[in-house]
Figure (cartoon, rainbow, N blue to C red):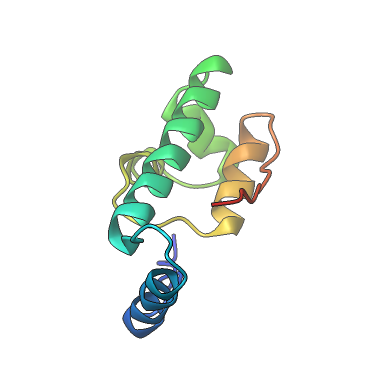
Length: 103
């Protein structure tokens, strides 16, 4: 599985935090936001696989990869690409959907 690039650079994070402060918005903590997003994504993946009554090995076989790769993905040891999430979703009979929310 390929390692994905960070969503934003540290400089971009600092600029966004400064902009939010200038606008009187609550402080934004990029590392915390990223960890929350990743934890939510991983929870969704594992829950969907469990509801589909599939093991990591079965998902791996359907994706053409190894069980250990699925364990790493579900364990949060790497930031999965959108392509990996789409392949995982298809392997468990789901589709990946991205939703943006107002902050």
